[in-house]
Image 1 (cartoon, rainbow, N blue to C red):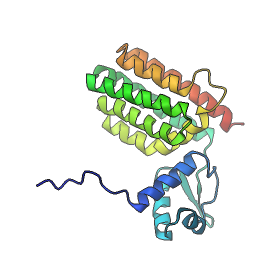
Image 2 (cartoon, one colour):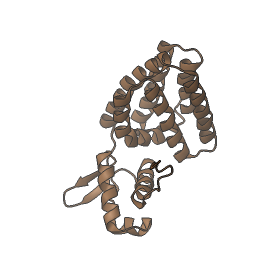
Image 3 (cartoon, helix red, strand yellow):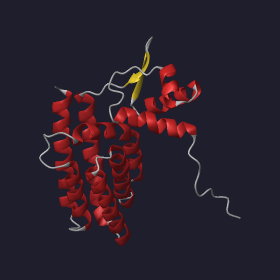
Image 4 (cartoon, rainbow, N blue to C red):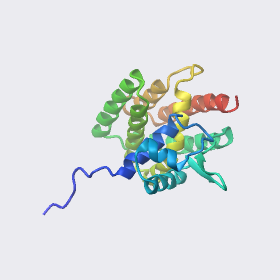
Length: 220
């Protein structure tokens, strides 16, 4: 007997969580915005208990903070916090791409090529949600191939804030090379050149440029 549910239904809470998370990541709700339960219930069409549960999840992800006598607001994002996120990304991603290169298989190569193609299309159509979700799948492939499972758990906990920074920086005219091209350079270093050091360098260049853009925006 096979008891596995092949296509588990998406719950109302999950739908609400994704909607509110994306609203914060894309800047629909900006830093410091007060999240009023009654208003959110009306906008999302859900009960107050669902909204409260979702807010608790987003607080755990670092996207929402609860202020005394004021309630939940969208977490403030400054350069001091952002710089720490970039430092963590640099350490974890450089290690992951190096080991992904060493553990490379034909299956991983095929998957990275497909995800890279999907990412290119997402950038071309300016589909923010698709850019974020496809980027996450691509990085998950790299981390799991590297067998860096705990590191990927850390990245997932930071993913809301990483995505928030990604949306902030990817449209900047200050970029010398597009975010997509940076990711492509990293992936090709893994599966085309199979050069761990080149992959690590591509990660360093990608994060350095993104951090520089974010610093200019956040300190403006």
